[in-house]
Length: 358
Image (cartoon, rainbow, N blue to C red; front, side, top):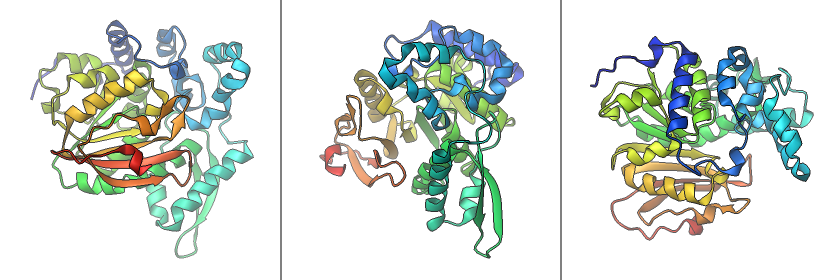
């Protein structure tokens, strides 16, 4: 194990976030960010210096672009190329939605997914995987029944309920990971860290790596540090000082996406991409797939849940090579424009063609 002199948790959290972001900015890979991710203020350092803003980041500009609860706000930028609205929104330092969901459509959609989850699952699956209150998320109060007909009352966040649905589809993957001692899981594009949180709570001994944009790495650091104050979270600076990062002791490793190219062959057990490749440009998708093919272990799992098509990005064009076997392929029941594709890595060519499973 490598011993590093200044672990992030010995520092103030915001100082750690700022130092990691600054180093990312100095090493930023050109053209790594697609137009979709024109969601961050030009001077992101100002956001990192405004500690009060982070207390409700799930209701303000910080989580624009990776928070379904803000979608009705953020999607207005596409109305008549409303750039002026978008520029003002990015400067807004007030909450964009109320604490209690007011949109009846959003309440209905949340309840619909909850009812779907309860059809074949005990209420305990839903309840134990609900998000904590970190980030002060927008919620609605719901009531469901236990098998013994007693009532359960809880608060639900729309984005979180969607993630619980996809987490349900990850259960078979987690069962395989439980047979591996300290499995290494990598997520490409992890939002604020919702799925990472659910996996870590259900698979405590895993090492979890996130590859993302520097601004989102900062959000993940804030969220995960507050959800798991006892866990070891490594950021970009500490990673850069390590000689063999996968041998180091950590729970979460938060890195800018371009660092995936520096990971060793056959080093990762499971790779997850959930609703983010569809928002990348073609070159970045190719970049990630080249690394996925190299770093995933034999019999490793790639869980891919993305839109069939978004702008000019099509799931059928994702550059899978031929060394995959299909594990699961189905349309999402709650977001029918999304397909869930789970594949297993093989050592030999299987003549895999993604188009045949969509």
